[in-house]
Length: 384
Image (spheres, rainbow, N blue to C red):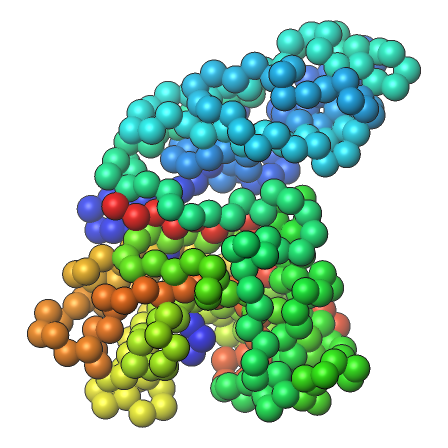
C-alpha cells in the first residue's frame, strides 16, 4: 500500500439500481402495506442497470417465523440462488441475470404467502423489478466474488489476515496492530464487510508491538490470485482524520517492488474528499525507484466517506486502468520492451483490504479518535 475499473472501450460498471428510481443503496425499497402484515422489497441497487447478481431484500412488518420461504417468491428474468433468513422478518435472495442479455428481473410475493405469529397473512401482493444488461460483459465471466452474505467473521475460504509485522511494526511509519479473527476489527454484517480501526492496545496478544490502535488487513493471498481481469470493489471509506484506507493488490511472488503493486484506491488521512490510484514497480516506487516514484493520480470524490462508490481496475497485457464509478483517471501502459522493472504485471496478484493508522499517508491521528470503519458491499473479479 503506498497499495477497478474498466476499459477504454466502455467502462464495465457493475452497478445495480432499483427500477423504481429509489436512487440506489441497500436502504432503498418499495413498500406496499396490507391491513395487518406488510412487506417491503429492496435491493442493493446503486447504478442504472444491473450487470451482475442482484441481492433482493425482503422485510416483513411482523415476525413471520418459518412461514416464508424461497418457494414463496416468484422470480422472472434471472436465476435465483442463495436464499437467506436473517431473522423472522428479514430475508435476502440473490438473483443472477441472464448472461449476454438485456431485460428485467422481477421478484414478486403473491398475497397470502406468509403469516405472522398471530395468524395474519399478507393481504396484498408485492413485487420489485430491476433492469439489467449483461451484454457489456460479453467475453468476460465472473471468476471470483464475495457478496458478504453470511454474518460473522469474513469467509475463511476466501480471506486470510496479514499480521506478520505486528511485533516489529508496520511499514510506512504506520501505527496499527492488525488483528486476526476478531470481529471488533473485521466482521460481516447485513450484507457488508466492516473493517474497523480502533484506539486500543491489545497488550495480551503474543505478537503485540506496542501499537495504540487495532485494525484488520484482509488478503486473498493463498486463497485466490489473478493475472489480468476487471476488479470492482464497492466501498465506503472512513471519515476520520488519521485513517488510511486502501484497496490494493500485490504480486504473489512476495517480492516488493519487483513483483509490482496496484492500488485501486487509497485515501490519505487529511483529505477525505479525494482518492488515489497508483502503480508501483522496481523502476517506479517511493523508496528507490530508478525512474521515479509510483505512477499515480488522484480524483476528487467529495462524499467518499459518506456514500458507497465502485472502485475499479481493468488490467490487460497492454495496460492498467484505475477508475471509480466508471471514470478512468489513471492509465499505465505496458512499454512493450520486456523491461520487468517497469512492467512486472504479467504474473498473478492477490487482493488486500485494510485500514492503516497514521504513517506516511495517514498523517497525524487526532487525540479524540476512538474508532472508524471502511464498509465493503462486494468484491468481484471478472476475466475474459
